[in-house]
Amino acid sequence: MTEQLFQFIWQYKLFDIAAIQHTVQGESITILSVGILNTDEGPDFTNAKIKIGNTIWAGDVELHIHASDWIKHQHQTQDNYQKIILHVV
Image (tube, rainbow, N blue to C red; front, side):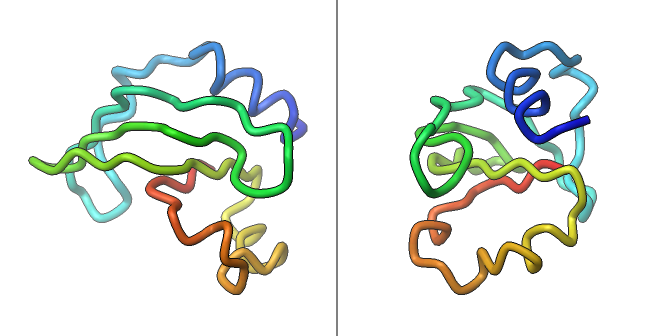
């Protein structure tokens, strides 16, 4: 799978949203809005909304094929990745 295919699947919700029930820490999660595809530099999707536990978060979503791509792409050092609310792998 390529990241572009992953973005297409996320953008058009071609996955079972109800199957995403918990974060890796075990907290309940609900995808309220997948956000808007960003074709410029920065996170893959902007203006997303998710609910984790009882808190609704609004911000950006980054998609990767491998969790290690976050570090490989050095997102932790880039200012435009500071509003990430969800990293989908």
